[in-house]
Every structure is written in C-alpha cells, then in structure tokens.
Length: 289
Ligand code: GLU
Image (cartoon, rainbow, N blue to C red; front, side, top):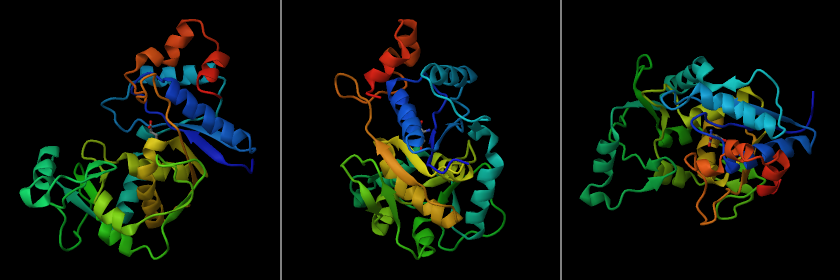
C-alpha cells in the first residue's frame, strides 16, 4: 500500500474538459505522485439531466492522452445512491434535516422582503431565509423526492471541537495554513444548505464528502472557487464521523481577458488542441505543469 497522499480529480461529464480541468487533473496527479501517493478519478454525475455518456468517454480519452492513469474501477456518483441515502438517514434520525418545499422564486421573495434588505449570498447562492425550518425537529421516516436542508444552527450544537482544516494551497484571498472556521459565519453567511435535492436525492456537498471518505482521499485538490464550500464539508465530516482530508485549493486557469474558463469555452477544450495537432507536452506547458 502506498503511504503518500491519496488525491482525486472529480469532473462532471457535462461538457468537454478544458485547460482548467487539465491543470486540476495534472496537479492532483503531481501532488500524489511526488509524495509516493495515489491519484484517483471520480465521475461526478449526480446531475443526470446534464451528464452524458459521450462526455464521460471523452474525459477518459483526454486524460489518458495527457498521460494520466488511475486505478480501476472508477467511482461514479450515479452508482452511489445507497451511500448517500444512508448518510442522509443518519442526519435525519438526529433531527438535523428538514424538508423544504420552496422554489427559487419563493426564496428570492422571502429573502428580499423589505425588512430583510438585500439578499445575503452564500456559497450556494442566496442564504436560505428559513421559511420551511421547523421549530421542532421533524419526526417519522425520512421523506423521499423532497429537498432536505441541514439545520445549520442545530448541527453546530452537535460539534464540540474547533472547526478547522489544513490548507496547503490558497483560498481566493490567499488564505493558507490552518484555517479556522467561523461558526457564526456558517449560521448567518452559509445557512441551511440543501443536502438532498428533490430531483437528485443528494447534493454536491453531501456526495463529495461521502465519496472522498469512501475512496480514502487524504488530500482534496480543487479550484479556489470551491474554497467557500470547504467549511460545509468539514461540518459534514464531523456530523458523519468521517476523517477530514487536507485541502489544496489551486488557482483557476483564465482566458486572456481574465475570465475563468467554463464548460462552454469550447475554444480551450483539450479535444480541440488535440485535433489541431498539439502534443500532450504542449498542452501541459500551457498550464505550467
Ligand atoms: N465536480 C466538481 C467540479 O467539477 C469538483 C468537486 C470537488 O473537487 O470537490 O467542479
């Protein structure tokens, strides 16, 4: 068994991989292998309305072309429903979740009520104004096909220890080293996040935390745009009794105008560079790895 860090690249198969993905994947592999560790791949396809098998096939093809390899079988989140349900049930049975029937418009209206001022934005958009939050924890079986939110205030009461994580890269404002998580910010600036979406039965936050633990990931590498999600993940690790990995948030690859690349930036798709005849070394050089 290798003793170094276990890292992963976790793309969603919803479009072509671009230079930003190439950088993320190469960095994850580099940080694992430079320290005698293991690089894993995970397909984050919980959003079945957007995931496509062609994109998944293209991910494998582009990553192999770049010179990356990983242990098989690859974990796919669409196969992990049972694990997500089990984690949700742990939280439900402790009274930490509640069903929410609000749609985006309800949330915007409640959060923009005159007495509320401008809606507060958290890592998942508008901070939930608490419309469906019950005064007593709900009882009975966990409802299905319903959005479930984490009662952040109650959840934090269950965690005695200090909330922190180790950052080996940097957040958007250069945050690095030991990062202390502010509980008040979690309640007021993050709020009752959705852990199970009605259409998916899970959420990005829940799936990532459950799967990183299941895969034995010890060093999470990802873009600095996800730094704000990390406090949520640390809370979930505490609540679910999962080990806390170290984190390395990395810079985002931007275009000439300074805008970060998105899936729609096909012009920087790895597949197009390949079609133009660039070598893997030339693509690596574009991202400095
Ligand atoms: N699937 C996420 C993405 O494509 C990455 C998840 C993570 O690294 O935590 O941005």
